[in-house]
Length: 416
Image 1 (cartoon, helix red, strand yellow):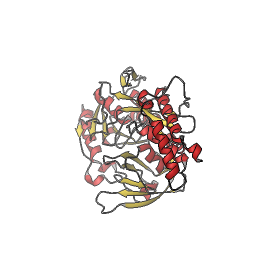
Image 2 (spheres, one colour):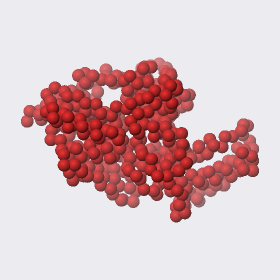
Image 3 (tube, one colour):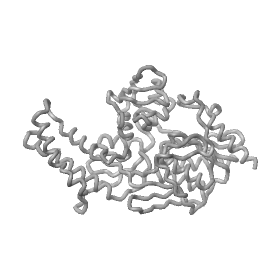
Image 4 (cartoon, one colour):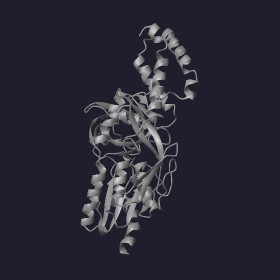
């Protein structure tokens, strides 16, 4: 790019991305999304009826970017890759909203993001959330997966990915950097509590099949279902598990949502519909204009046994919709520790060139009108996981003190 075309290049880029952002915010979602799982909606086409807000057009950003472009072109000591400059502008324009869940994806990032939507992907083999210190925290390392094989543990913090510091990075971008082609390597620098120095691991990416539903029949006729994520296949797997255990004489049910970061609203609705009577309000959303969208149970089937729901600080979003709804109706006893506290809804808007924006569009509320964003759900029975179990990537149920606490809650109800 020569000097003549360089001047004003940045200004034009930002003008375009600001228009794209505003158009995306004005579109209609194909389905409400509560976390990272998103379908591709139809690409948005810029419309003449939507223009940047006055607060943007009056800031003088075009003039300032003209100056930045001129300074870079004249003084910067190396050639400039303006594709990377453009990418930085797009990311910056969206991150400037100040919402960690509203994120711009370039084509490569969006492609990686979509890979896990079918329940399988090539990558690291873990679940991740942003910790209180701003670094990604591994909330679950899948037993037998690539990360587990090299000695990475649940509870580790990621400091760098391939030499890039990830402090403050959006969660979805962290996840996209961990994924890649089968057989390729990703190097991660880890902070582990109790270790004097950072640890570095070289992880060979491989196909990871995400376990969404695991079941076991415990003693005394107590069914146990662990739901690790609310994916497209999860509702069917959950409903099949309930049906199977009911035939086997299930007298009570534990639903384990610990470490579950969320997923699809449609999946949560289907699972709650299998438990609660038809017509019950399950969850509702409100946007910034006060427009409300209600979701109701749509099945005549119910689960008529005592229920306990296990949760912890990594149970987020769709997990909190599920647990909060059952708690509101007195249908389940929540056992464990305070949940994560994500009470907002996102939708993905592809932009037509392979890139996309994930936008927070509304807040959600439990049937009794609770919005738990940044506060979380408080368990009915507070039980911390034993310290000796916290770093285990797979905890045997007969050693799990929180599972034992849920059993203790249910046993008196079974005897009644």
